[in-house]
Image (cartoon, rainbow, N blue to C red; front, side, top):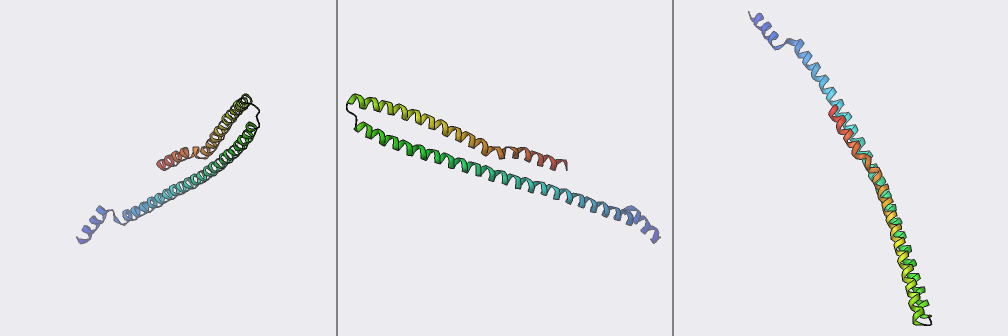
Length: 154
């Protein structure tokens, strides 16, 4: 009778075959889960690396653009000061008030035109630098969406 009870208990619990099958299934599930996690980690690491490279590229472009803007402003300011000094000397050498007034009017007009031209040039430099600096970052949002979707699918 003891053997029969033991046999019934083994059958109810599933016996050694059931335990072995459960262990095998559990091991396979663990292996599959680990492989998915490793793949997800690799994708996330790759995304982070690519994003960092995009940020560095963007920062380099922005730095070069800032340097270009600085150089343009410096050279324009230097030229403006030189022009003002030359204008002051010319005004001192004028022979009449009327001549001085005309010289000053011409100088003001040319200075204003130079200023407007310089502001236009600076605006173009700023716009092109902004466009170039954002370009490496634009694809990163789509890349993140792809990483999330692939993680969901796995």
